[in-house]
Image (cartoon, rainbow, N blue to C red; front, side):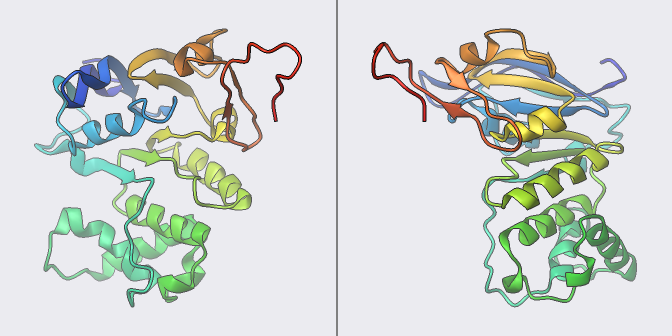
Length: 263
């Protein structure tokens, strides 16, 4: 494996039911320092790919390979941080922000282990990175959606993952929080390889170093300048891409000449 490559997906296929493939023969490489943005239609397999990388799903065929020189561990997935799209979290549970963040050590420390002073120190440093240190003693039920998102990301970052996977991180936060998150991700990318699944074209236009277009198969994997027609090929229909943080819009093809329009 090339030394710069941190992991490879090799000929990955997956199906929940026979003859209904979610992914078909998908291969791509992620290099150390990449900021890879994965785009494609709903149901195209983007989240499924993340879950296969994480080991949450087993591919029907193919495999994920980790660079042994970078992951000198029997369990390299311990060094992957993951922020899912839907966070199952009881906002009414009586827990403070700082305690949510130190929960990020559970994967390394295991259950029924006390957190150390060093753990709490690292948690505070990570909260400072996302501008949430002033809220460390606040109950989580006092936070806005954008603030909670930053706390969840801090929980993921506290263990200093080598790869950070984020699934639709801007879905439930306001435009200002989206802009802040984009800036944070660009800063973290100096030390961390980042992979983002998103419909937010603002992330693509401002932050991406590489783009992957996925709809069951890999249609494109390369630089941020997409070849002409590749978006339409990926989505299977004409689309408009609206930048500046506004998600893309997908339109069915119109055959009418007098009444067709785009909102």
